[in-house]
Image 1 (cartoon, rainbow, N blue to C red):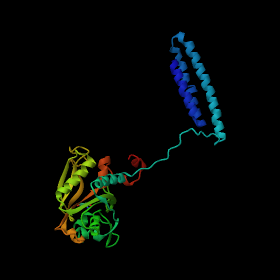
Image 2: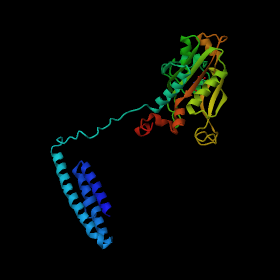
Image 3: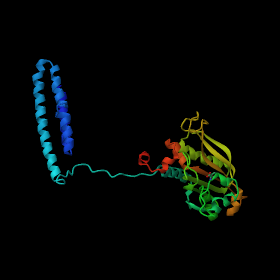
Image 4: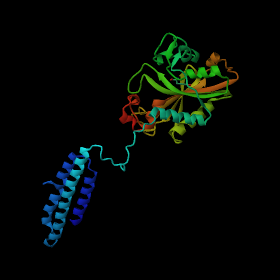
Length: 335
Ligand code: DAH
């Protein structure tokens, strides 16, 4: 009991010293010294002590009560003084308030991580315009007017010949127009489609990749993307190259990774299949070389397109794509 009293005294003093305003002083009084306060209830418990101990503990309790009351009065004086001359009390020893520090948006973090991996493999970064000519977004990628593939991408048209790019693939053409092989570039950026639900937003992000040189094979595509995905999701992650179709690549493949949430057993995120589609890719279609003056007899290459939100959602375990764009600090602060 003696120890309890001394402990209580210590705690009360510490609290008194740190009090900053009179209203919290009142709650201090009620808590420690009030009729139902801690000290009173301890004194009541003294009845349970063996009689020979009571005098000593009683004396201690009285001292604590007296001294705490005195300190209480002193603190009241101090606070009243401080209130009077509001700025007269300036404690230079108090630690300063740390300024709030921002950080990269999770999408930016993903961009950087992806670009870092490809840059280590020798790719360069090239960015292109968000407002793009129909020619680059579609025509030169072997998607002529009235091609059914245009329906897959609900396009925002600025005018008949100008669109908000629906993918980052137009950068393939822009890069090849400017430079003869060898080329190896990646192109991160925003893309736009008329679409909005839990898994779609009208603006989202992609990274495009392109590598063209002499003698590039599908094996190079597989090796490069495998290395990338293993660096991104871990060496153990199983991959699956699945035949697909894109107008600007032939042959084309979509790449799936084994669901990283359920380990391939099948869950809601992978629709019970155990696999998650993660990117589109293929060997650049010779038709495209026709638009940029590359000789398909000499050169070959591969291209790929990666959806950033999808990767970020998997890496961070996020189930609603809209969260990336609401700028809710409670969400963003977690990254
Ligand atoms: N541009 C395609 C899309 O947005 C993705 C894509 C697929 C890009 C295959 C490529 C590729 O470079 O080879 O759906």
